[in-house]
Image (cartoon, rainbow, N blue to C red; front, side, top):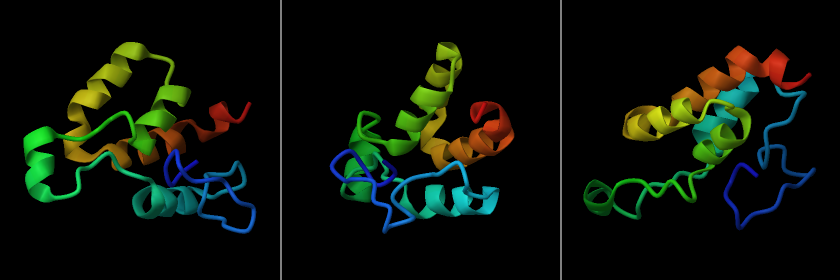
Length: 100
């Protein structure tokens, strides 16, 4: 579920999930545009509290697909830099393997 835990996947909304038939371009667009972020409600709150990784969809996808727990922890530490780019890069690099 790309748009957060409180939403549903919908066949009528192609942007509600990443599908095995999606191209790498589609994946990048969906991750950058639709993936629910763990960011706070304002820049000030985000700077003060940081990201909420419990609701961040990119982290949830990586938690599911990434087998290396140490790598996942490293990614969580780097999340403030750009987790969406990390997710896109991982999915594109490993898409064929993940679909086996």
